[in-house]
Length: 270
Image (cartoon, rainbow, N blue to C red; front, side, top):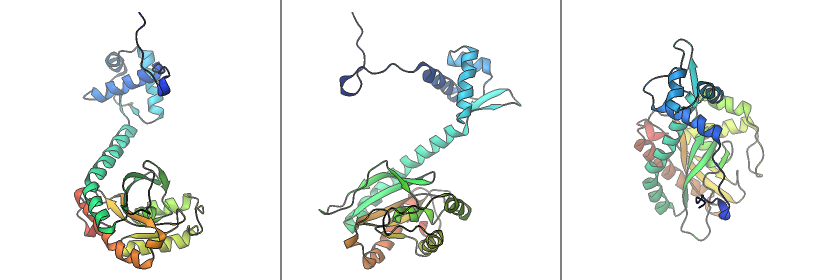
């Protein structure tokens, strides 16, 4: 009798696991389970693989910084990329859990869509959204990555990065015009970011998406590093200068409250 097999999308037969990937994961798991760095012979034994196979897997893992070799001890260990992934995932989970109660209060107070973004490399990514109860409202695509130089959320993060990282970003990024309102002059953007730092929040009227406006403030972790932002967004018609001035302090206070939940005790959380 033929053994039943898992089905993939639309009832198609699921593909078989890739053997090489399985072996690489076996090596990673063995490194993870070990109390200390391991010699090749011991690592091969723990992973259940032959030494030549284990070594080939290690070469690939080391090329991606998932494993490292320490010549002084002739042992292998987990690489920095594993820690980076773990910390990034932990930050996202912690930020979302810490932010949700404050986001709910902010939506109730403003009646606008409230979003949470996290810093990912030189971009930001939407990880949570509470939509406005109003019929006409702004929504975002969770998981989507967007540039830092355009829009309220991006500027709220960018303005509070360490000066050297900000300058590196401005020298390396290409400022592309997303709408007629996008700031594409580096000097003008520097001036705008200085104003964001002075008031503690950023505002945007159609800079990233025509017809959409937002007000955002930075979220910091326990070390004081900016890891994301809280924003309130909606149609530009409801976000003229007066609305931004009213919403700005509310969003700034909300971001500070989330930062406090994450262990940041600096002035105002921004």
